Each structure stands twice: as C-alpha cells, then as structure tokens.
Image (cartoon, rainbow, N blue to C red):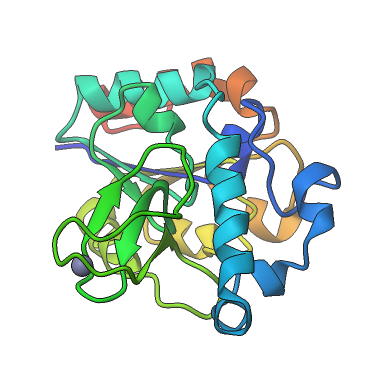
Length: 236
Ligand SMILES: [Zn+2]
C-alpha cells in the first residue's frame, strides 16, 4: 500500500484567520511568549496562562476551515488506510472540515486535561473556569496544549507514523520547521513535498518538490500529487 504522511503547521490555518506566534499583529504582541506558553510561566502565574488559553479558545470559535483543510479531509476520508494526518495546530479546523483521525502533536484548544488523573475532554469554546474533571471530580484542570519545556506525548505517534510510512510520500504544509524538523523527517521518505508561502533554503533542499504558495492556492496541486502517488507509487 502506498502510504502518505501529511504534517501541517500554522501556515495551513493562517488563511482562516488563526493568529500565530510569528505574526506581527494582534494577540501575540500583547504577551511575552515565555510567560504564557511555557511550563515555567504556568508555575509562576497559573491564572494568567489559563486566561490566555481561554482567549485563544474563544478566538477559534468563529473560524472556518479553508480549501486546504477541506482537501486534506477529502483525501483522508477517501483513503483512510493510506493517509496519516498529523498537525502541529491546536485549532479544530481539520475536524470542522470533517477530517477523521487527526493527530494533534501539540494538543487541542477545545479540550481540557485533568492534572490529577490525566483525563481529557472537550469543553467547546468557553472558559476553563468552573470546570471539574468529569472522571475524578478534581478541580485541578488545565488547557490541553503543549507548552514550551513540556513533554509532547504525541511525538511518539509521529515517530511511529514515520516508521510506518517511510517508504512513501511525506507532505508538509505550512510548517516553518522550527519546532518540528520537517526537513529531517523528509529524509526518511521516498518522496517528499513541502508547501510554504516563503522560501526557506535550509529546509527546502531536503524535499523532492517545493511549492511556494499559500496553502489554499497550492491545495489543488497537492491533491493531484497525493492521488497520483496513492495510485501509482510515483511522484507526478
Ligand atoms: Zn481527573
């Protein structure tokens, strides 16, 4: 079976209006990233961090999936055994596009996590305040997003999927390679495709093919490449 691993990052959701660290506007300029997105910051000021994730959760409530999310969902649902969908994004836009079995490497904004028993559950887009763990009734609950200097348990799944798909096709969409080394991952695959809006020479050379366009503009071409690979085992 011809296997495909799709890894997406912030560039996938940018056109849906999800703001990121690297954008030079809005939300992030008001905050020191290490104060609101790190294990140390959480110990120092717990409520500040919880408030911050409340804001981000609220921020995604009215966002809609774009053509690139829909393309990934369509292919994953048509070829569930061939394709693994992994994302660094903590929004739910792939799910809203009705993509199944999305692996969130850095957690999910809509979920809370119990610090006593580890249970994870969906609260939608509202604030954390007032929630207790439905499993053990503990009040020690937090956002389910991986912060800096915290373990990322789903990285284990990433390594498993790389092993499973390594003779296949790797497709990286909208990822700078600064958090997860997408260029390094590409080397394990027979073929690899990178879609980023802007060139990044130190990463681009690792891939068989590079598409420098916005994710929604690149989506039809990526779709064609993936379909062709599943059917023929070759890069178009
Ligand atoms: Zn619990």
